Image 1 (cartoon, one colour):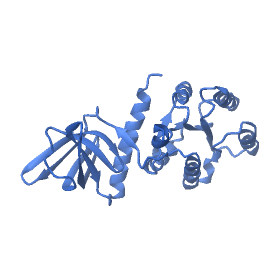
Image 2 (cartoon, rainbow, N blue to C red):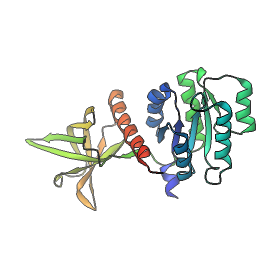
Image 3 (cartoon, rainbow, N blue to C red):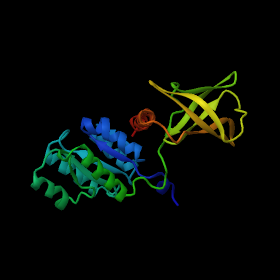
Image 4 (cartoon, rainbow, N blue to C red):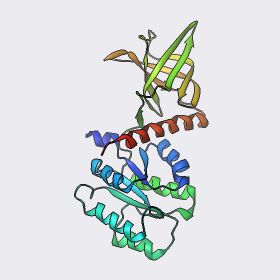
Length: 253
């Protein structure tokens, strides 16, 4: 099994409408799809070359004129480095001739999504397209690297002793954190009232210690309580979204 099959495919949203950027992206991430926003058509094309198995949904209502978007997509479809990428359209334009052109003439594989259908229906269509293209791969959740974020920390008390850790990575199911010293607690220990700080967000929950990494005993793997309130889930996923976006924005391509 290849690493790509396990990790899944990246999904890019080029020039996304504000409702997609602010709300739909949260839902896509919570559903387990690694999703990023792009605001640069040149960098978008280079990212597709770097990640040739990815998907990209393009908001054709912004950025370029309609005939320019057509040329842009044809260029992606004919470029040997990007021809395997899967494109989709996002638009409030309900012109049937325009839809037919993209679907029939350009053979856009992920469809023409009419945002006039409403937020829930549009999200459902995108999720179906991502599922059909196996964008999630075999991973169970998205993991984001946050080792260089000094604001990603946790702390908790056991008895009279306070433990403090610096997060290294985080997913919807748990995290890895480096403590100042080895956490001398048995595996499956319950860690009560862990304060998890994610930049401006604060989450308080019980966590479970799974164990330490073999290569660095100061690094512990912790799992979240399975019954996380929805507001706390949003804080965690929005932080993951920030980390993922930072990675893409920081790529020098």
